[in-house]
Length: 329
Ligand SMILES: NC(=O)c1ccc[n+]([C@@H]2O[C@H](COP(=O)([O-])OP(=O)(O)OC[C@H]3O[C@@H](n4cnc5c(N)ncnc54)[C@H](O)[C@@H]3O)[C@@H](O)[C@H]2O)c1
Ligand SMILES: N[C@H](C(=O)O)[C@H](O)COP(=O)(O)O
Image 1 (cartoon, rainbow, N blue to C red):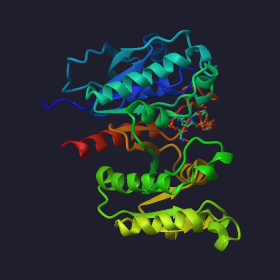
Image 2 (image 1 turned 180 degrees about the horizontal axis):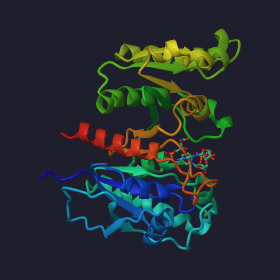
Image 3 (image 1 turned 60 degrees about the vertical axis):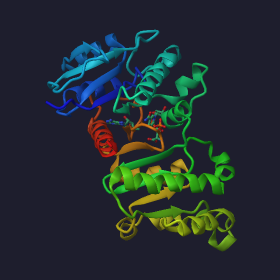
Image 4 (image 1 turned 90 degrees about the vertical axis):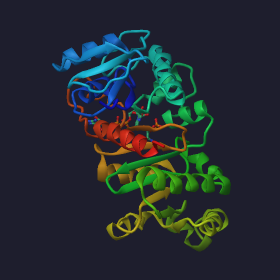
């Protein structure tokens, strides 16, 4: 029998809903060798609390699997510094959380894992632990020395970001021709390679209201965005814009484009989350490995209640496997 693709899954913030979503994933029928990276005691306690016991075996990289039973997973134990309490973050565990990400990235880079799917972390508490951290996307980019593009996908709607976790005040300075060109090339290439869209049509949003209103409401569209798009069109990219963001997502336009390219996090993501929350997937394009994540955060308000929905987790795991399969030589 063929060996199953090996999917690393990081448990995320231990006080959040990540551990219970990992248990739900283990109980799904996903065709993968699931390697859960996190604390063994936390996982066992979560499964017991949910009434969904899981069959965990210690992860041995030298053993491959050709089948996985429902409720089964392998565990790569990364101990927490302190026991976790649902809903109550503890900066003392920040380093342990980051260690799971580092292990997953290194395993992907060495070819040990076919892909990684991350469950949500709490960015603030990692910083409270004294570690500068703005997100998985940036962490994996740094660790692999690559330029990365954040893309969120919900059904046919795909939204990529020119800038990610930046204070809004810093965004205009980050909107430079090289950054836009590099990320638009990553988007075009990723849509072709990972989503099988031969000639992607991309809508590029402006930065300012009404895409700058001809220069009367800001000049980035005239001086930076439009000239960059013109150069990229000469390379063969199919780009519309800069479009006024307020009307760019009306249904008639959504039907026209394969993806949107937004200038900043809260220009693009609220639209995607309003339309597709709970079933969306976050994909990192540009890394030398496959990485997906859920479309939501740590949900401290419901952690430990058993109310966490696993739709985005299942979608993220499935998309990671689908992209890994497409990238097979
Ligand atoms: N991939 C990631 O690591 C990731 C993604 C987004 C946010 N975050 C982090 O999460 C933290 C909290 O962010 P937030 O409060 O803005 O967003 P959130 O997604 O954690 O919560 C928003 C609301 O949605 C609900 N919700 C979220 N996921 C749910 C699920 N699976 N099932 C049912 N309900 C769900 C929550 O209960 C809450 O009411 C922040 O620290 C942020 O950095 C991490
Ligand atoms: N921007 C993402 C979202 O809102 O869903 C989220 O913060 C996760 O980002 P990372 O995957 O980089 O942690």
